[in-house]
Image (cartoon, rainbow, N blue to C red; front, side):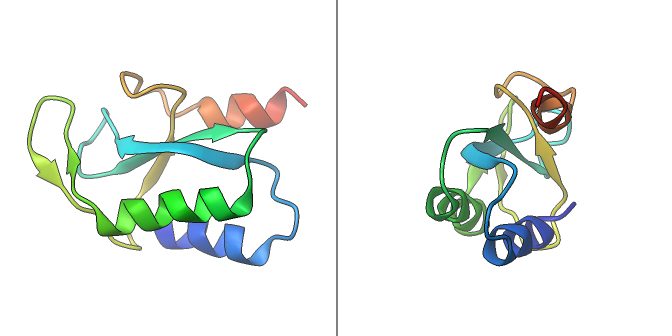
Length: 95
């Protein structure tokens, strides 16, 4: 999923199955972005974090500056030090 896909999801889904509560450079590949998903939140804040991902520069886990575009691959983590990319699956499967 790209940032653009994620943005489309939040813009076009009346009742999302999850929300976004944080954004950061993904530890697995710094040139890709990670979001922290949550059952609690709202669309406006989630879209704000997507906009932040598209407009700000992020520091990689071991240094370096990274910017992201709508075609950048997204990942989902519970914390910045993780790189398992399973946070969204675990959140959705625990329903």
